[in-house]
Image 1 (cartoon, helix red, strand yellow):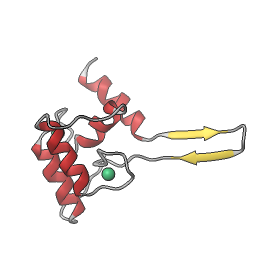
Image 2 (cartoon, rainbow, N blue to C red):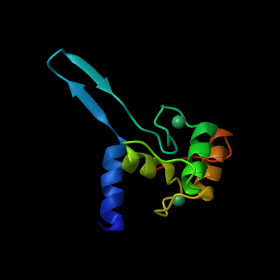
Image 3 (cartoon, rainbow, N blue to C red):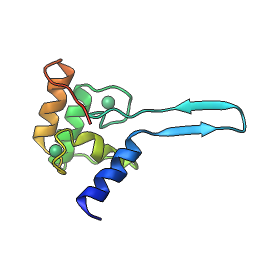
Length: 99
Ligand SMILES: [Ca+2]
Ligand SMILES: [Ca+2]
């Protein structure tokens, strides 16, 4: 899969919408760039996870494609310490994580 296709797919996956019509119960989950652990917030836990994945001390879960997209904060197609640093900076208000 080309980098562009992977990127498009990942962006589509980044905005997750789950709608359960049968119960008239509607829930919408929106993933944020930098939220590598998918807990709904961007903080040092995400930066730590990204760094651990880069160092092969940890792995993403079953949502690996989405986590990889959200962790790749500089959009270069790789997960490394630059992404972890960017996440930390965003958490501290020193950077903005945008698509
Ligand atoms: Ca998080
Ligand atoms: Ca990156």
